[in-house]
Length: 86
Image (cartoon, rainbow, N blue to C red; front, side, top):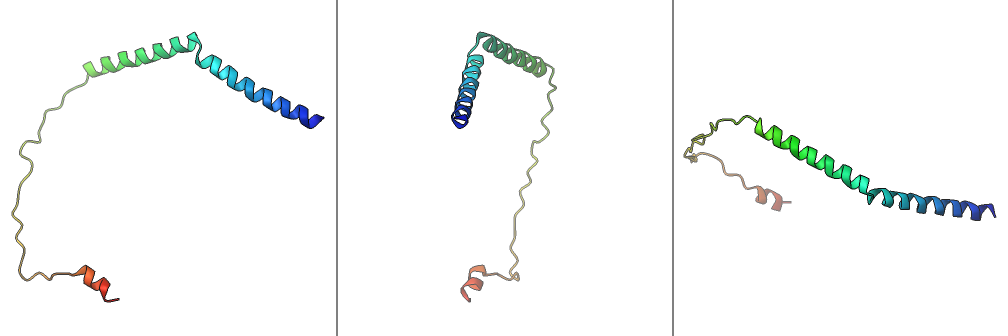
């Protein structure tokens, strides 16, 4: 008997939790607060973006192209051949 009451109590608690959570989530007060917070964040972003300093672009002609000359005396390595010798 106590076991059944315990299960009913657990079930009622879980169902009550979900019902209250859904009720709060879809309430008008929650929607208003959510909209207010989003709009205040947007206002803060707009104010911050107006006061944001712009940096001068100093990256013009920064890449230097160099010809790469391969020396003839350089030893050529054959990695795959080393593995095939096993």
